[in-house]
Image (cartoon, rainbow, N blue to C red; front, top):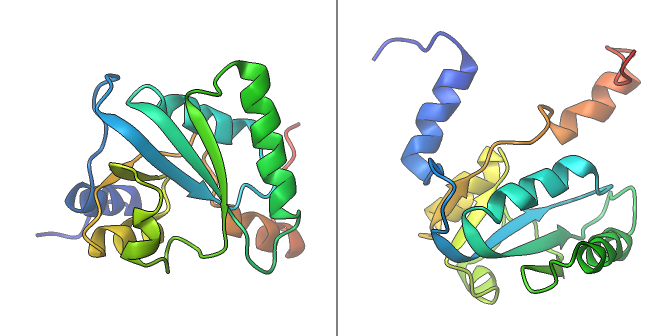
Length: 165
């Protein structure tokens, strides 16, 4: 196998080995889990949730609560819960808080969510870990092309502006 032309091609090939990539917008799952820092919650998170609802009856949103957050996890969970109520999707979306990052979570801890699949929005570390635990994964690409952990370091180093002109 030759060297891939770009990192994107390489990652997609790895993802195809790890998990299911939804090809059609049809309900394939009963409950699907979507975890993240959501620090802060923004519209692209909602776009991902709505995309997941096209393939699942219910999305369990898990706000990760661990040191180093900008906002209190309860605040992010509250924003989600209020938005869920306002959107009329209370029967479709549940919001949880969890202290363990999903790149380090145990199989037993995942089982308490009672989901038939686990989604990751382009977080390959989480995908590979959950897959290694023997749990089914669904890859859902990010609604907005960024890597959360890369935004602040670039900004602090005086890199490209994150603001649109």
